[in-house]
Image 1 (cartoon, rainbow, N blue to C red):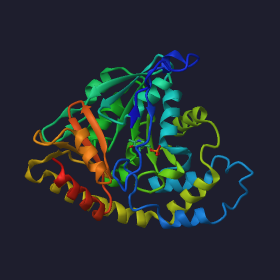
Image 2 (image 1 turned 45 degrees about the vertical axis):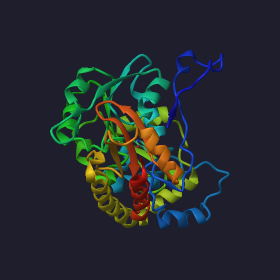
Image 3 (image 1 turned 135 degrees about the vertical axis):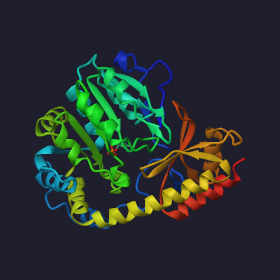
Length: 360
Ligand SMILES: *Cc1c(COP(=O)(O)O)cnc(C)c1O
């Protein structure tokens, strides 16, 4: 959740930073459906690797350039290791990529609504965010690729499946942007596993496309902070320059390698459960016209309450009184006010549905 800074702030701080909001995590709840992490937990081989000694002494820096992690990530994506760079969560890499490809005073265009951290990272780097609303298409929310390109922005950011709407961007729209963008295109695919989208062929199409991925969502390793980007070796080298060295700790590196080596079937089984539960929850929320639920290719649903229900903040408060946390998104463009709900094991979602039926 982004909290606006109140008060005057510290007088010696950068003036341009004064009204940039600070991220504050939600307080914990018994059933936390607010942050899109893997609610089944972390995968077994990664947990084993964490319990064992890291192999090398923690007195030394992690593997230079983490060759084994890059190799595993590259083979997971079906590309060459020279195209992959790991960092401390994909947030760390998105921030570094903005710094690498835009000078202060440049602009970054992105769809709205999309990942709330991007305008923040842009502003922290002196880059101006330009918001281009998603469109309500015939069946689904859609990208406006023409308007994104027409901004002429140095960086265009896309997110598919899009957080917080769950929208899977159409391939043709992504290709339109990649083929015509004047600068670098960042495609944030943090939830790719849940949509079954494969981007390796897009990478072959253009050397100005950077894809950002993470082990925080489907891989269940959010606490280890492992993200990665994929792009042409030249693009990768620029992100590496602005990122700086040693962003992945030796422990995270080993657990990530173990997960990529042995836990992929575990991840695939959880993803299959997400897909089943996503449909089931969407149908249950839609029943009786209580919510409008947007089509989602991610491990969350965006649900807009019917006018007969209380406002989203009020619903969230009533759910919280019953031990359930969801993400409140008031006043999204195109969408309106909605709740974002992470898909987990069915017993958790059954608890949510029971609590929702008592909301009034
Ligand atoms: C969760 C999320 C991330 C951040 O992932 P980390 O690797 O944990 O930093 C990036 N992009 C989107 C769209 C996300 O939802």
